[in-house]
Length: 344
Image (cartoon, rainbow, N blue to C red; front, side):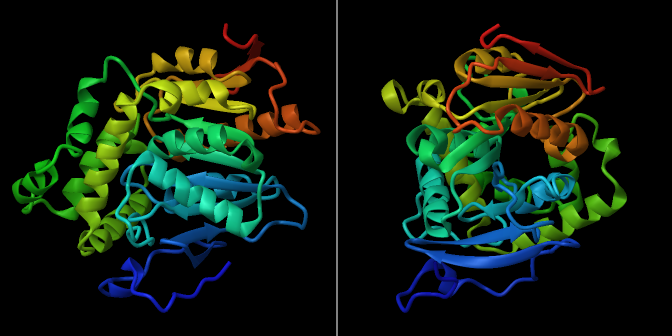
């Protein structure tokens, strides 16, 4: 695995210089060159040698920074890495311009193959949940467990609050939206995103808000920012319409890895009603229901999510990552845990 650029021209070699990405205390950030894509990898030095590896994949418009709190909570439990999908965070666009769910999954697989860290505890949020579901279905050898936080799996009745995000995938809409909102400040944009993604935006600290504004200001300077958003949104919509063996729900049925499902009762982007279907579909599932959480539970309730994740690892310790039939663990925001049979 090389972290140097190849002699040929790639997207990474023609990008403008912008402010550096924030690296939190105890974190490291590095760039990894792979065939057709360059990925930025955020990590924390493992608390001790021999910890099992974990990889985190963010959602639409997010970045590896979305996982910083959860990674810190899991110090001493796993050897954590979070990647920036192509075109997001500090990763440049893919050379082939493929922002489909399959394209993003291919980037994750290329990294895991090159790093030789698999099988990993794979964690995904929103778009990252769809991506990691596909990875787990097509490359079960790379996935020890799967944790999905509000995964973007197809819904027959999409919530009205999610429609504007989906419309970004319509050709021309992103450009029109950019023109219509050109006078909006980064602060206004961040407040809008937090109102959409958090169950209670007032809980976001002033420091976290300021850091989010600084990151958005940086990314708005990138010429491919809106293109990456629009094409990735289109990729989600396209994945929703796929049927047959390539459909995301069909692939979810094929996932062998023990799976933790996390759904928020105030999620405006992924319907909370989909939690029951997901628990029935993933063959070895545990469901964490957080009534007051929004779309990014790992940022709103990192301690609760970390507790459920540790219990998943404890339940599956000594297994080979295949279906164990252990059933579904349901954990409330207060930490109450009950175990029910899978598919109940």
